[in-house]
Length: 123
Image 1 (cartoon, rainbow, N blue to C red):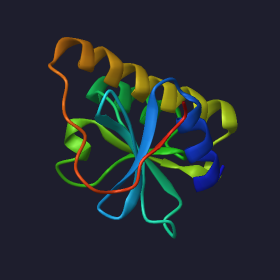
Image 2: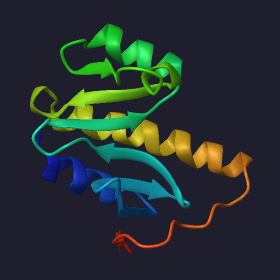
Image 3: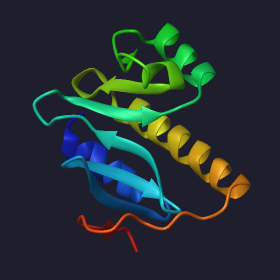
Image 4: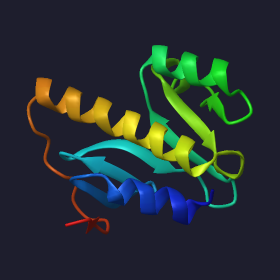
């Protein structure tokens, strides 16, 4: 898989918008981020998961998934090695992060989108 595949799959999920976060492509639903691309040269996508989901993915496929180093990883943020992932794996994990964000959004008040940046919606 590639960054273009990550983008295509993320934008195919209902209600997803692309925007720029720290100069890199990121994806949100309901105004909140659930995934992003790491630096284009890195070949990684980033997924916002629970610690339990992260542990399960890393245990099942350590050649594909690894916690993001530092504090972010300790909160469930997880790298996916794009070149090692199949389309089914990438689709499934993006859908997992998207569903988690939708469920969290339902329990919290809406957030305004950040100012600036480029937006692209799948509508």
